[in-house]
Structures are given as C-alpha cells and as structure tokens.
Image (cartoon, rainbow, N blue to C red; front, side, top):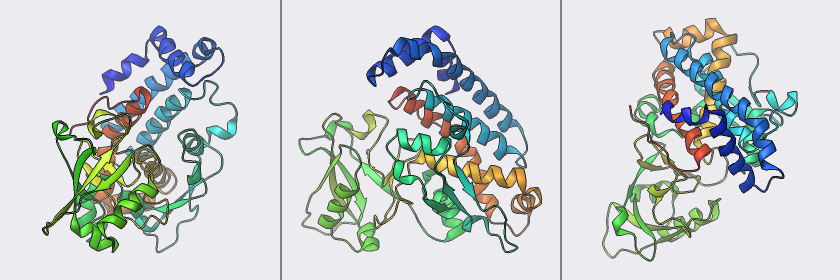
Length: 339
C-alpha cells in the first residue's frame, strides 16, 4: 500500500496531480497553486511514512503517539489537495479536537469524551468534505469503537452487544434496472421498530449523496429482507471508493459491508470512518503523552478490558487509515487493506 504513495513523492508527478485537482475545483491559476503545494505535500507523505514505520516497531506504551502524528501528517497532505495554501495561519494547525483535561479518579476510558473544536485540522477537514455539522459535537470512546467493522469481535466481547450488522451484497452481474440488490437481517427492523417501508424512508432521509434506496416486499418470511441501491453514475458499490455513499453503512478492510442501526437522531452514528480514526488516535495519544501512569494502568493492568480494543484498533489503523486517505486522494477504491 505504501508503495502507491511513492506516486506522491516525485515533484513533477505531484505538480501534475495537484494541477488536475485544482483545475477540477475551478481554482484560478491551478498550475501556480500546484507549484506552491507540491513540495509540502511530498514532505508530508515522506514524514508520515516514517512515523508509521517507527510506530510499527515501537512498544505499545508509546505507539499511539507516533501513530497519531503519522495520521496528522497524512491528513495535512490530504488538506493540500483542496487548499494549496494550507496552513494559512496557526489556528488551522491545531489538533481541532479536545478531551477532558483532568481525568477523574474513577476514570473509564470507554466513557471518556472527545469534542470537535471550531479551529484546527479536524474542523478544516470536516468543512472541506461537507461535514461542517460535526463542529461542536462530541463522542464517547465507546461510540467511536462501535463504528469500526474490524473491531466487532472485540467490541462484542467487551460490551456484550452488537453495533454493526453484515450486509449481503449481490454480485456485480446481477445488477438490474432497479439497482444493485442487497440483503439486511430482519432483526435490524426489530431493533429499530420499523417496517421495511419505514426503514427505506429513513435511509433516504439520512443520505448525504446521490444514492437512492428501494425495497422489495416478500411473500414468505425470511431471516433477511431485500433492498435495492441505485446510483445515477455507479452501478455497484464495489465500483468506487465511496461504497454505499451513505453514513449508516461501513466497509471493512476486505471490502465487506456492514450496517449501523440507528434512529438517525444524532451525528454519532453517521461519522465517516476517516474521522473516527482521527478522534480515537487523538484521545489515545493524549493519554499516552500526558497521563503515563494512567495509560500504563490501562494497557498493562490485569483488570483492564480496554487493552483488548485499543491494541486491536492500533493494528487496524496502521493499515486502514493510510488506505482511507489514499482512496480520498485518488477518488477511487485504490487498494483493499489485508491483514
């Protein structure tokens, strides 16, 4: 996967890449903007590579800090593709998120909260990618872990509940006029107390993109129900980097899809995964950097449940976050991360 980032470590190639981006955005004098941004983007990518390399080889005690800075540096490279003058001021160089400064005596990591600030890298990314409504919102660590498909086994062990349900996607050859068929388990309807028709209406209402949904009434009782996904420019979810193009759907590293049942009343369940990784890494890095005794107790304490999910997340994000950025940079599903 990192070899694909080598495409962004050649100055002539990066200039062409950025000029194409800026021209498509309608920016004035895209060639000049690309000239300014090319070298910074190259060095962000190079530095991120080294942060991630060092994080893989270091002990768990300091791994979150190195991984976080690698993630931040890749995020800055991503920002340069939409803003050639990033960072225009010191305010946008801040983290853009915060956690409680003082940890209580009865601190529980899964209950800790992270909040999005008005200025900094995270809100800049959110604004440019159409998620400005995230500014000012907050999530618990449990909320965030619930949104990562690869962590579902550990999540069920720790919390004794399920947060994501598998989606069965029909093969590419079976796509018809109504769209791409897919199946969800009936127990999702039971959990949400919805009929298939009401469920489909909720999907439509919560969508942020161009995707449309329909459902098919079945005469017999089945453990799953059939729906259709239709997009005006894409025939199948596997054909582009946005997948279902809907905030309630998730994709794991092997390209399998999952649904997060929600009543749609808040943003916690809609958070794009690239932002989930950012927030979790920020919270972990702050503990690692500023609370070494507490951090040590969490990851080395015999009574700690947190380590199960934390260590698994750090393994997943090492591979998946760079892949998510790669897909955003090239606006397609470039590669599937494999363990």
